[in-house]
Image: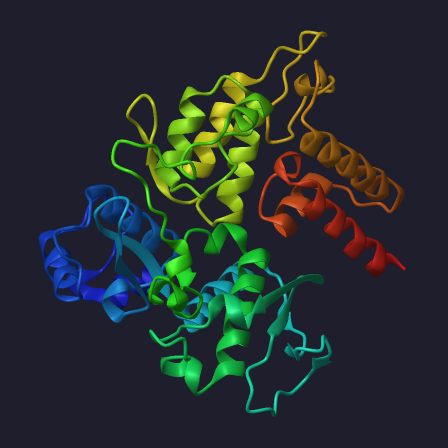
Length: 379
């Protein structure tokens, strides 16, 4: 934070401040933040600036407002550039004493073939970037169709119309860096990733609801309720919606699924209001809530959803586990066996660094992907 304080002068974001000063607020308003921004959004943005050590007054990080029909107002989302991501990653690696590097960027053609240089005038189907942090590989693929910013006629707009391969590669790099540095980059997205959020709404996303009638897409059906995963099926929820569901459920498996959803949507660092009116990061709240709902183990010990235990059987093995949790538990057991056989001393720490979440919360697919990667490195 010292570099921001030095460069920012009177506008410096200080580590101990809990709200924006009048001077800072005036400059933020001039940057395009209007009165529709909420106190919670401003508070979360301040926390994010402090955590990432990016300076909003040098345009290293900024709030972008986009109109949300559900909330009938602009919703503000923090953004930075890929350069801001690189600054954070290099600084975090240096402070941890880790080496940071990249493998060659690859682009995929529509026929599925990968190339190390893109020469076609047509856009690539996808790009792949691999970040290497302290010897561990973090690969991510970004599909062009998922990120391209378009005009109303569907044609690429802005830089997406001129530098398609470069823009797709930037999105892949952002994904890979966020995998390699989950704690440092959680909750902030690059402008390249978010460009598609400004695309004109497509007709297929509009649903007609008769006056007085319910929207069948907005409400999970009875089958989802019975499965214990109604909170995460059917539609994406904002961070506060996830927190609200976690605060009312009595099923720990629902909280686990909510954590996985929030992680996949990059919401863990978002500030939410809890049931007792406290403001917490969503990830911290879900972990605490899961601990509250952990059933007592038969031997009298306790377990929690972060995977820290005192040697007893996981409380959730009592009774019938959801299929997803069973698969994740099996994958975790295989990973722990591999770690023991190959001298990996702290698999909890290493897995959390690689997956961006506690091992006990990771889905089976992610755990198996990590195990496959480790087996390949060990071969």
